[in-house]
Image (cartoon, rainbow, N blue to C red; front, side, top):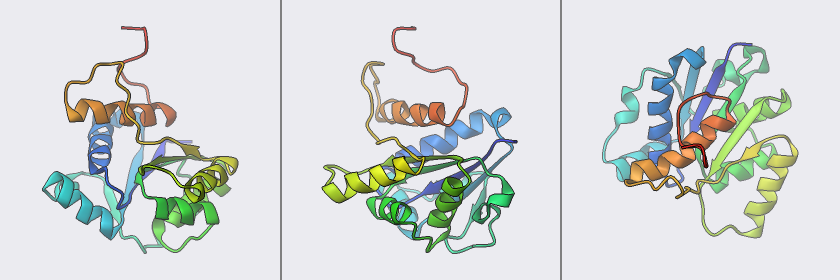
Length: 187
């Protein structure tokens, strides 16, 4: 199966993660056939607030409206094999965990889970309450991967971008990408 990826960007704080993820995908075009992106309205507003621009519009990927159920990945027959939600709000996590497919993000996640494909949720909240933890458990039991937006420091990042990249690179590892990057005790 060709590597076809869905990137969902929700309104959780952490637009830098989405931006870095899209930038890194541009560097590794040989590792996927297609990327489809869906952003919530809140994600666009948070992007403008945190990054000070609308540069998400400049990426050469196919963007889909949040209620476009004609998007190919709204059905398992399109064979998208990986979905990354970066960042993933707790509201989105809750709807995915409950099987509520009320928009394209949650429908795509439902499809990925039912088809037994790879769903990676970069959850972005602190602290967690019990409902968040139970929703993460539900997604994990259904086959999803919870990858909190928790940066690592052992690579001694020097900028905010380098720090955020530690999370994005971990997500790309989980998605099966091959790329040079910091590996514990290998440098």
